[in-house]
Structure formats: C-alpha cells, structure tokens
Image (tube, rainbow, N blue to C red):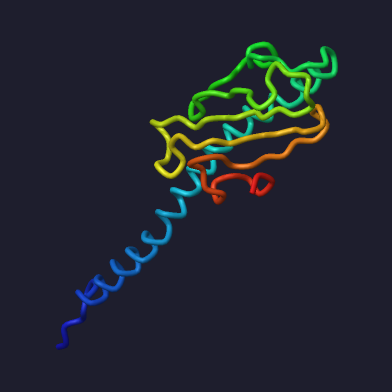
Length: 145
C-alpha cells in the first residue's frame, strides 16, 4: 500500500511566501503614495474654497483682503495647517496667491510641510495651481503639475 501525500511540501510553501513578499513590495509603496495624494487633496480643497469668495471680494472692493478670515471660514484641516494669502493681499493689483501648508506631523513623510499654491493674475477670473517647497508633483492632482 502506498502513502498518499497530504498537505503542502516545504518548497511549495516557500514559493507562496516569496510571491506574497513580491506583491507586498509593490503594493505598500503604492498605497503610501495613495495616502499622500489623499492628504494633499485636503489642501487642494481648502485652497479652492477661497477662489470664489476672493474673486467676489476683489470685484466688490477693488482690493484683496489682508486676512483669510475675511472671506473664508475654515483655514485649516486634519492634514493642512494653514491657508494664507500672499503676493497681493491688501493690494489693488489683480494678482494674489493662496498658499496651503501641509502639517508637519500626522501626514505622510513625503509631504510634511509642503506648500500648495493657487494664483490668479486677473482678479480671480482664472486660477493656476502649482506646488511650492517640499511638495513633489506626483502627490498633487494633474491640474497642479
């Protein structure tokens, strides 16, 4: 009478473990990038929420506000520390830059302290999104690259 093999052999188990390791080596960095992009999307959303109120403020008063609180309520979030105005705040020029700063803690290490900018040069009719210091282009939406 012959003994029938039951279960897996050691080589079969080693092959399965190697395949799982390869899949994890690919999936974990991709997931980390996904998390960073999701965290940056909060900064994009907070910055974008200032576009219409800023354009209306400039249209009504002919000048830009000096403080973000004048036109928008929420200036920070879970991953975004501040949303500020610069390069025209309080001025009558048609240009202003809205800058969102990513927090230094509780975010993916690839985006800590990064800056995301929205800029208009025509009084708020059109806006250009671009990255600032510490924020790689791969983490921002395609419209900001």
